[in-house]
Image (cartoon, rainbow, N blue to C red; front, side):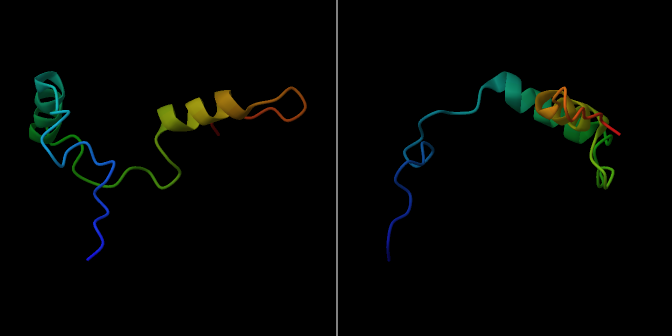
Length: 64
């Protein structure tokens, strides 16, 4: 066996997940709002962020 765990901060219990993150994930799961696939073209917020990051005056991008 070749150990590939070097660099994994969770191997020895370091960097535990903050309780605020755990609560947020629990709330999202219990809300049943995220039980399914996202739109195949991507969620609007992500599409908008990508368009804003990669737009250029010579090649403008939009979320659509």
